[in-house]
Image (tube, rainbow, N blue to C red; front, top):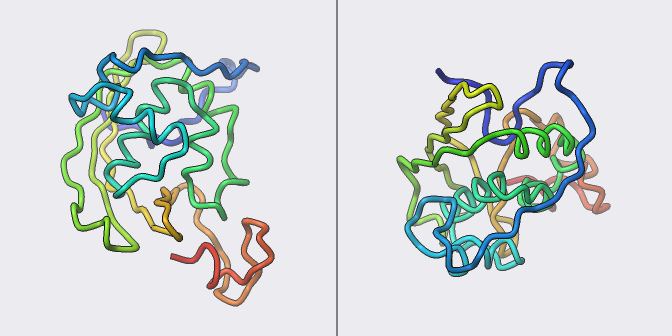
Length: 181
């Protein structure tokens, strides 16, 4: 069953509740949740601690791991800055907390993205809801590089901004000089 996107899944109103966002610690020698086969300490943890991703595929994997570990701040900061104020942190935290994460399969990523400013990554994420029902979501996600950092472009929050309008991220710059990829 294909369900909604990895970065946001609305919950039915009856299950909405306030939850405290607590990231789950993971031993750096444990296998990384992204499934890349490396220990967390040399795979996604450096990105979660602020190191920029070298390409879009690495960022995508680190975002999956962030959902597994409840690192909502990381998910927000790795989304295109102009879209960050539009994100529903509470819903993201609830989904992260309530889901049992079953795995990630990266089907296609552009290895040349390290030298590009835009890239796409196709993946399938799998999880189970608290009632045990299992889901998968296949997506071809867009990413862009601003400066030295890669960002996820959230398809749930398209920007209706002209290139000469002020950037919605609040930088004070024109959109074309800031978050326009």
